[in-house]
Amino acid sequence: MKFGKVNHPENIDFTLIETHIDTFRVLSKNKKPTQPNIFVGCAKWNKADLKGFYPRGTKDELEYYSKQFNSIELNATFYRNFSAQQFETWRSKTPNNFKFFPKLGQEISHWKRLKGVEEVVNSYLYNFSYLQEKLGTIFLQLHANYGPKNFDTLQNFVESWPKKTPLAIEVRHKHWFTDKEANKDYYQLLEDNNIANVLVDTAGRRDMMHMRLTNNEAFVRYVGANHSSDYDRLDDWIVKLKEWVDAGLENIHFFIHQNLEKESPLLATHFIKNLNNEFSLDLKIPNENSNTNGQISLL
Image 1 (cartoon, one colour):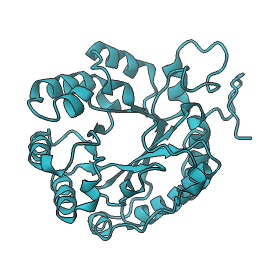
Image 2 (cartoon, rainbow, N blue to C red):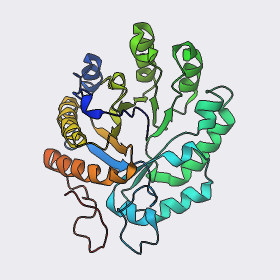
Image 3 (cartoon, rainbow, N blue to C red):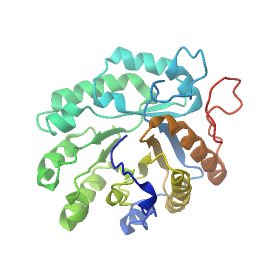
Image 4 (cartoon, rainbow, N blue to C red):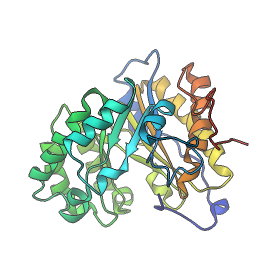
């Protein structure tokens, strides 16, 4: 993920801002969960990107990946609408507790810009449905030039979205964050329709760290900078998530990207260990206790 990449990450202030006051209002509607539902994963499972992650001789990358992580942020669907049979095959290869979080295609978000997309959206939803119980939250990423002037189109899309199908939306145009009226209207739209507001933690766009949740789901896309600070940043997220869970957050969906994706499993391993310690969980530690010749290392 190159979005928000900077040449000198050491010059960026990565401090997480204080939680938006309305996040606490939203979370106060819920009882503090005994344990939160936490899914952590990478954006891809292919060997070309995750170099060094797979043991020599691995024949099926998804089958191996899904035994190491409990989820995947499925970015491949942004570029292509895979067949129902393909999703059925992926479902059959993965453990019972595994979930896919697929991205809606660029035809919907970037080419047609949410106009006249009913047929193609229905096609995606039909194909996604073959994941059955392994389908997590679907997410929509809007183009960086899709600003508040398009609010009516976005509102029509959101209000026509099937209510029983979880959705998260990521906006990138700066005016969604700087225009107070647009900001208020956007958050209210998501809140009224039980849609998650995606948070993106990336070096070059700190404005997207709005810390505003709009339902009982934290959908976080973390982008490391292939810099030593990446680990400290993830430690800060543990503190933030603990604050939200104490306030009533139940669902955490956290996906780790890198400018060079090969290091994503390393960061995810570090993060999962800390999650287990903080929340008394037993999430699988990638490659832990595996008799493999994989090259992954936290050293």
